[in-house]
Image (spheres, rainbow, N blue to C red):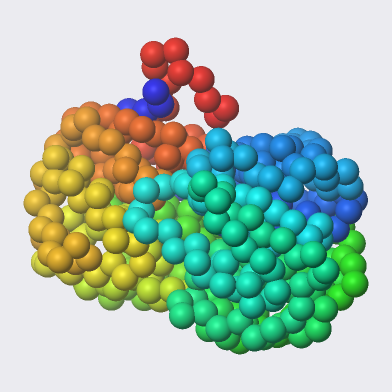
Length: 430
């Protein structure tokens, strides 16, 4: 069992450097399946989810070498088109190998996805999109089987909801399809734009990424490239909100303000001093006393709205601000499970209708033994421990390790008292 031990009562000061984007790196690894040869990715975070995706690729026959933050993947000798259940169940992003496999090899078999328990996973968006391109889809005993006996063909794909991973799956399938594909109501997240840039560098023809209407003209073949993963916007927001919650003065290096527009606007509305860094990419946040911040209401929405992956961190911040804030969760129905753990620490958060939370502050939190319900909720509990009186033990820390590189080291460098602990003979690559 992995857990974090957190001593409260310390403000954060200094500089912290953001790692490469988890949600982009995983998709670029999958996209390497589109071209035989060696793809080289730079600035790849050393986290559990990357190790899981590497294991998925290994199971397909790819070979990889991970040195520092440079990952080399050779997909020349793919001999299997099945992503095994024991790996895919750990991480829902594994589903994005479906599109690359079926478009390059004509067949793919992927277990229904797992990962954080955030609620229903409507992977029908992926399946409907691939069906529109001509893939034959079969659901068999928990596996998704996709075949394209001849070749995929360009088509119009209209999403009811701008799913990020479904947009990515269809984009990757369409780049080698015959003809033109038009994706309507596609996701607009920065990771979509970066994936399109990566694919275009490989030789794909894509226009409109980031606008909601993406046009992909299929090509005969792609070639492997070298590419640097952009900074992680969710990690950036996590450290920015941690600094605001504890109080202090922190420069979050490599944070891209354009990727955090709604989050930064809400923090400014609360009274936090948020500035673009001078002379270096990044965001600087200054808060003398969190209790002097004013509460705000937020609603999670697809980009460019307030990210659902920042909602739990904002919930902790609102417990320290003055007034009452209402959080409306519009993306995942199970994202409020962290509120139960925060209430164990004295937060007093009220939940309504399953998707609204009323947060009053400022509250004096007390250290307690809590469990990370999922990746971002786990990070939020560590932040809560940093402002609580006494010691907080955050169990089920494997969730946090899925998405944050050197999390406790980075927080410790800012002045926090956070320690990682492995107990009861468990083992983890950390």
